[in-house]
Each structure stands twice: as structure tokens, then as C-alpha cells.
Image 1 (cartoon, one colour):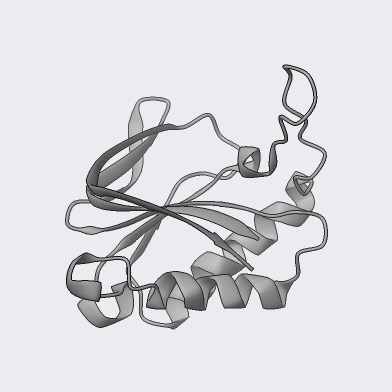
Image 2: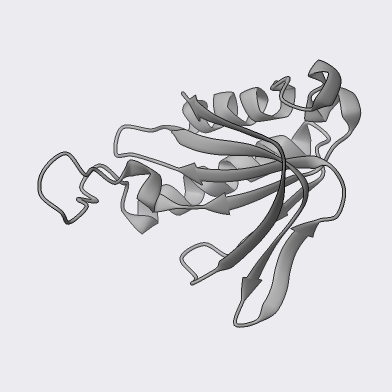
Length: 141
């Protein structure tokens, strides 16, 4: 699995103009994707990494600071631009494989006590965020 994690002071995701998920205090905006070889175990590891990642101010994590996460699926994280001008999506898992893995990450975060908001899998989403830093990391399992 792959995630792009941005430290934010606030973030929101809209579908059809309606806010479906948001965080209104410092936390993490997480764009997450799965590839063909990913498993449920990797989703569990991703959740642990995201919750314990010391990416907040003063080397805090969402676990230690009780900071929220906004998790949004984004298959384009597995896009390849190595050849030509058109991205290839062949490394991204099919929706029927990716959706349960993204849901597993969210479920595992919540089981760990994290406050999690989400987007809508497969929907056209508009994401707004106020970056803090800026501070952005790539996290892989």
C-alpha cells in the first residue's frame, strides 16, 4: 500500500458539493492506494504507521496527540509516467480489491482509537486542505 500524508491544520472532502468528511484541527490528510499484491495484513501495518507516524508538531503522532485523520482513497498514487505522456494505471488494484483494503485501514485506525473522517470510495471528490509546514511524506508498506 502507498499513502501520501500531509500535515494540515484543517481539511475537507466534498462530493457533489456536500462535505462528506473533514477535520477542523491539526491532523493528517491521508491519500491512500492499493496495488495488486497488497493484503489485509499490509492494511493493518499501514494503519499502525499512520497512527504512530511522528509527523505532527513537536514530533507528536496522531496517537500521542489525539489528532484526527482524513483518509481518502486515491488510486492515482500508483500511476506511472515512465513512458509517454499518458499515465498508466496498471499498478493500481482494481476497485473490488482496493476498496476493502482502504476500508481495512480506516477500520484499524478506529480500532486503535483514532478519530477518522473519510471520503467516498470511487467518487469524484474535491479535496481542500490547509497545509502545515508544508510537511508531506510518502508512506509505503
